[in-house]
Image (cartoon, rainbow, N blue to C red):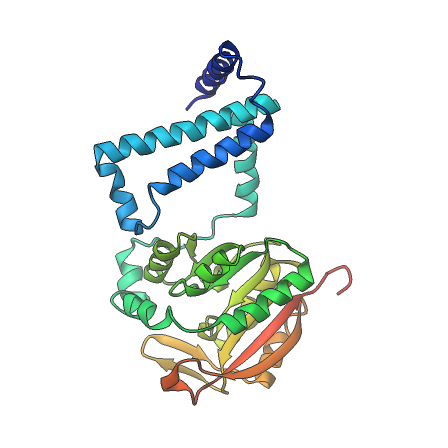
Length: 322
């Protein structure tokens, strides 16, 4: 829709309301409430559908016409509300896009459709990815997530925390943070896992290694559950530094590692195990981060209950007072 098209619609809707003496009812409050009702009616067409079923909905001409009608109602009320408030909708949208381009820079460095990356270099490539999602989706990480979110809200005061899930994996924690009312973005180095997590949660997941992350002061909290353990020992300080830079001052980072003192390989997967002393060693090169708490837990998988995990919560220092 071009700007002239939007202007024509605005004038036509204004004349429509005036001719019927509806202007008295078109207060910002009434229009906003009517808009929310129309959005709900649009959502009804997709409620309870899987992502695949929702994508096929428009293959039915009748369903497509009904959805188009609901979208038109949403657009009409939105245009009318902007007109009543004296807001240039096209300009406001352009300005918002410009803000979002700064807030959410592109971090994808690997194409998900690249067969070379997916099959040869990715230890989580299909069919392993689908099996991994099934095995890890139901794991109970709620106590750790609650502890992390509580620290984020206490330290930042954010009513709606912005969370970066590093190594989104199955998408389990993405969905949990989304359902908790957070704004969430995920990254994962595996194209197949990123695709499955995004499809399963509806949350954007970029294909990116933490070693390539370039966000600056963007999020209130970073959740790195069982993900940094795949970063080689020598690269961990830089990885921690990049995560610190992605946090706003006062932001909180959660990270977990398998308890141990070695680097090792399991097939194509690299593991860097840490103890609290080894964690201190890596953090000594990252003055941007302050270690708030460290503790050890058992593996939540019953078949691996004898394995232990090192958990850490870290704070992005205020550079002015750091």
